Length: 203
Ligand SMILES: [Mg+2]
Ligand SMILES: [Zn+2]
Image (cartoon, rainbow, N blue to C red):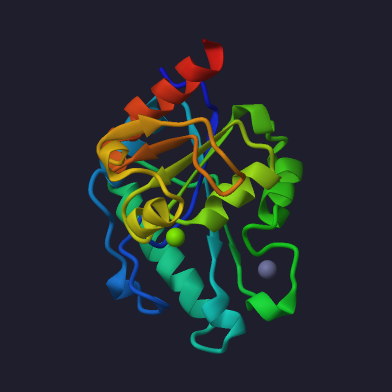
């Protein structure tokens, strides 16, 4: 059983298909394995927290309410698997706002840490972008996993992670805060990845 107690999860490109400034809840589509793997982890007692950048609000591309509607749709889709979020946070600001909560800044972690008494040593971040990895590094979370859905594949290429190592589950010693410790091709491999990550820690 994975020894993390909480997972911090990116939304677009990680849990659901990345549709570039998604504003319509009908467009929310779970990625392969997301419902099943989170259900299995929920049965083992893990808690889930959404941490999402939604700069479309700050850029006036869509409304705050449309983000809430999409998050609610996501919650409904996952509830069908018996999965619920302990909390769903998002940053509504544009990059130029210089807020404290837009990933890679650790603001959303600070909120969760205070609100739920989370311990960074028990937490793992999963996302499809370098910002997600940097967020995890800034928050000093014990784990950070890059998933190769959404932007993940191009991020791995940009980080110089060789394509021979980006199939299935691969673990790394991260070269920088933008690097993941582990890569999974999709959520069907999440549980295996979490176990592998902890084995590495304990070795
Ligand atoms: Mg994403
Ligand atoms: Zn913000």
